[in-house]
Image (cartoon, rainbow, N blue to C red):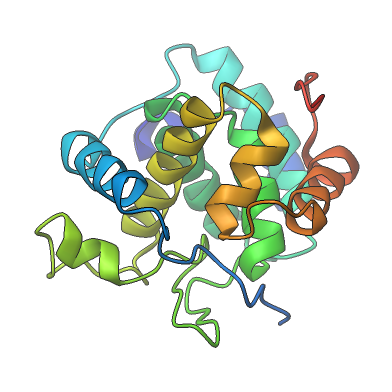
Length: 204
């Protein structure tokens, strides 16, 4: 959905809209060479722009709801709208729930686009910079929100598929902490407490 759609939201919607500790294990390089190669190939094939929101009413409802929830982290209403549009677009293109992406961002960076972890992960979704070279895009800037979201959402998509939809295992792999539930439990709690709209299957 473009800015013209956002600007055409009814007055009552706009009225509602107006009305760091970072994870140190973020997205480590996969230790398994085959996994690394498969993820590299996946990113090469899927990193590109895409639109979302086929229905204006759905856009209004989701943006108003999520904007209210996001206000604890971002005070400016237009900034919230722009970010939420980007999150929804990147998540939809990657076939991952945007509410899960919001939970990951909360845990990883508290919505700070300039976040950098001690291991060098960058941006809202704490993407490791080596992936830019791996897929032949060294010019990409991971502090740009759209770029960071696209990388992060595609990596999430890869691991959700690889783990057959098991969200705990997929989130642990995303974070580079396979075999531990510490990180995935944090994401689960953030999703459950702040971003949940519809059920997600968190069963093992």
